[in-house]
Length: 158
Image (cartoon, rainbow, N blue to C red):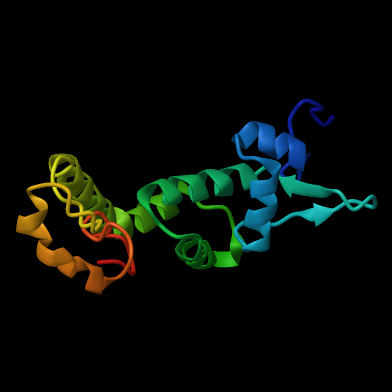
């Protein structure tokens, strides 16, 4: 006699159910799918259905984003898993160790930002007396647009 209240491994959830359970908007789920981070099947009525295990992949994506990884990096991490399976605790541990340095760098950058909030940020306004010390004659403008001293630590910026 099969137990009726135990969900099978192949239990499928609608996009609305996945959105509700994960706290991620349906539009973001569709975007994640377009990016190859999650996968669905289609019903006869062309509605998306996701395996219950997709909830773990979504949580993985969210955690990796909070560390500061780009979606392409997260996809590469997920693609490194055998058989396109859901990340296990061991997978998360292995992959997150490679992100530790980036997280430490981000923490250091945020601490620097916190400590320098009352000084020149390299925006080019030259309205603060301290700007003459950090950005004399707006020399940071040669590095590109925006607040150059705030962009330190952002990939592609400096």
